[in-house]
Image 1 (cartoon, rainbow, N blue to C red):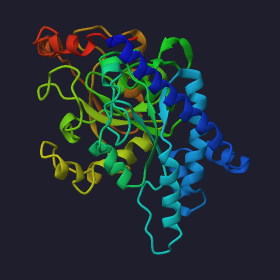
Image 2: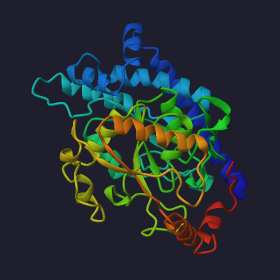
Image 3: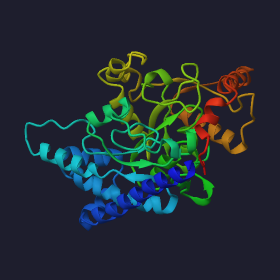
Image 4: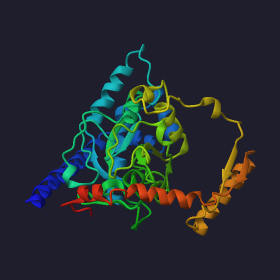
Length: 372
């Protein structure tokens, strides 16, 4: 009986996804070829400037990214749904912009993709589990809320692994996300749908989440940029736990993007006007530090090629060495250091916390559901 109920829920969710994708295909066709060709080749800075100047409308940008997201999905299975109301949001923003006294927010009209496990008002928040498929948040996560305030338009939700405790990306509702460069490989997890979408040029930037690599790993696997903020720099209030771990282990929402400029602008937006710390008293009340982030400034940067716990692959070590050489060539001071036994002891403590209840919480969540 339980499986029958879950199967019916899954059928509804999958049909909702397919309907939204077909709708998006039709909407994408309504952009002129000239606008489409111009917008598709713009990077984050260029489209931001074009939206600010009025050269590109928010509606055109959203329609173009409908089409690009669908193409990425057909290649990787990265989408959970296209958010239809994003088109009306874009139109409303364009209408406001016709008023000469209207001051456009800093990220006016830029389309934003959002990981399914990140709370988005009115949209499913299942964490890839059929038993939670009808969980519909009433408000956005505070990070998404702030980005909306600064003009970004959430236009799609992206696929995740069941429970979000995985370095691959598969669930029993929406299926498996594959790597945009090879269908036989994984996109990484748990922000695997985001990484696959962005690396396939289906989104300029998006919001994922990370505890043990869930932004960083898929960004590396799929080939895009990702940034994990320090945990207490963003709000945790709307993040549901797959396992009992907070506040000792704290996941955090953060951006993925096609280029690092987008990461910077997203963090500038989220860390402004003390919005997050005013909304969440557990968030550190520190805005974006412009004094620490200015062109020409040099830094003292520590690095290592082995953490002393698990030996890094030669390719990973090579990337660190190449980054060190590039940074030194720019005038920065690079200092090698050793973690000694810190990584080993941290791993021991992490696993002890995760399995403090002998897996009871995870087993309860997985009871009676298929995770692949």
